[in-house]
Image 1: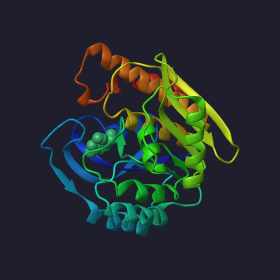
Image 2 (image 1 turned 60 degrees about the vertical axis):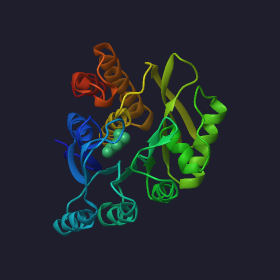
Image 3 (image 1 turned 45 degrees about the vertical axis):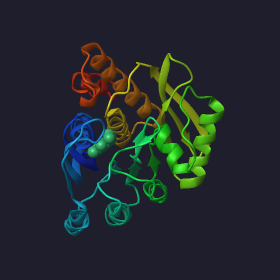
Image 4 (image 1 turned 90 degrees about the horizontal axis):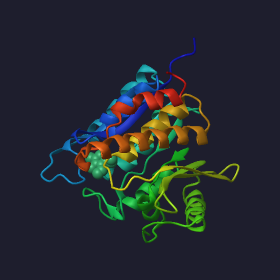
Length: 284
Ligand code: PXL
């Protein structure tokens, strides 16, 4: 029997609103992968659409936790970083990678900063250049169209997009971050389909993996997609198959939520669709 794989998920935990660790834990577990956690902050809700949320910043705990694991000889097949709780955590993450990542550890960075052309409420414009530097330490980055523009210091463009624009973004991101694998989400050319574009900077291969375009902006879908992607990659799926599994799962979760008419702030019903994801990985 093969050794069980293990991911370290570095995100906040928002108590209500299905995103970050409340999404990464169940999805990565459903992939049959152990999910350890380094929480960056504890919030009552996420910051997208709720007002009056509480936030306990855990900046001071990050390095002591990483050093403790290092002293125990803990190993991780991937480190999956998402929402950071403070600007200071950016520098610390570089150190977390150097303490905990081994040669074959996949460092996957989701440069969580904004969506739909806007920065999330807790961040200011000092964040994007620092996040761009952090991305230079990653093997894989997964920006959405807003985050791609922020990383590049370019103006956000609303869709629909052209292949020329998308491929230009991928190429400029590869140049700016020297990351091997780039997965750009929120790509669409018309109202029918939406999904991701990928670039493998080593081979120069670009691929489009699209699914049904369901109208509406559902919260936390980036984390559903990212968690599914990391789970599939750690299980050994090639990039395009891992992205396909993540797109199909995310679209299924959005469709279930759209049918139910749930308030979009509460994220998507990925729970009902975990079997879709597990079947794509050959677990079910
Ligand atoms: O899904 C990204 C995310 C994660 N964590 C917190 C957020 C957001 C997006 O708004 O506010 C706290």
